[in-house]
Image (spheres, rainbow, N blue to C red):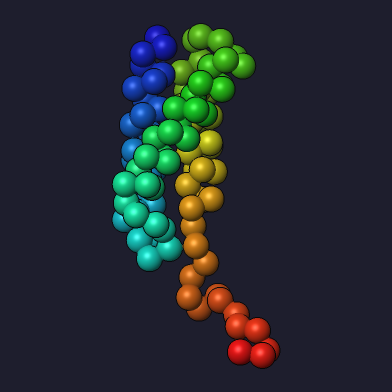
Length: 90
């Protein structure tokens, strides 16, 4: 069962990171960093959720993987150009 949790969280992280790269390429750093962050975040989220709940909660573990992966990817986002404000002295 733990193998399925790890494999599922790996897939969840890859899909979420790929979607972020596809939808927001101008606001993210390099593609390899985004993909690695998505996978690492999902594996860490699955580990934490599995440790807290124990075995037998596959969907909840995948939900934890999705949540931590999304939070990790959100830390990589840069502000868009139109939202940047310059100081009054510039």
